[in-house]
Length: 109
Length: 116
Image (cartoon, rainbow over all chains, first blue to last red; front, side, top):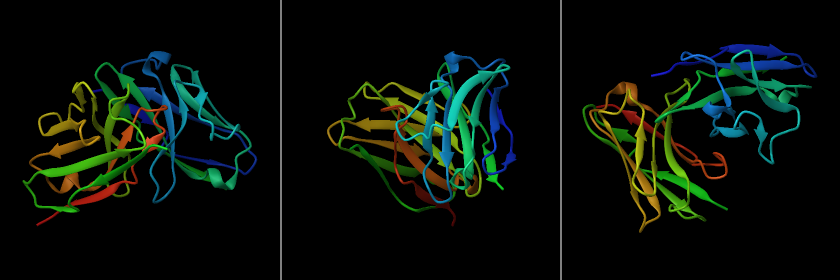
């Protein structure tokens, strides 16, 4: 089974920019993995921010964007706000299975 | 508005079977979407357990495949998870979700503890 890797933790200053990445043990992440990004705050269910690499839900703040970067899926947060402090998970699809990354704890400080 | 609601025992004995149901309201389980189970051990990350399509087609996490069964009941608009031979490592919050509108819909999650 594939392993999906994310940075365990990142810190960003309020108003700053940070990029979270999502890699695959099977090789480069492509659009064919249909990358998703989820945000999860304590005590809440995950909520999808980005689907199919770069598409946003209607509730996704404009400061979040998704892309492919250097063989990985990437979530870029521009102009970080205190309310963006959360755990972020990527999800990749493989033939017959989906795999979550281990999550990135993002601190806005 | 589609809503998903998990239900089932909050405590299961070791070596027993964990059984949960996800009731779908506000939408049809026969839509062109996959119905998914995800779990999260306390303080840890998310794990995809498996999913089912209304045709009955299933996909399972290879690490759990030998113990997992996901089924669907179209007459009740719900789907279910059975996980057998449970151990303390299966203690987690179990979420049901759907690919409907790109993972727009999740249940609130239910904590299942495996303990004697």
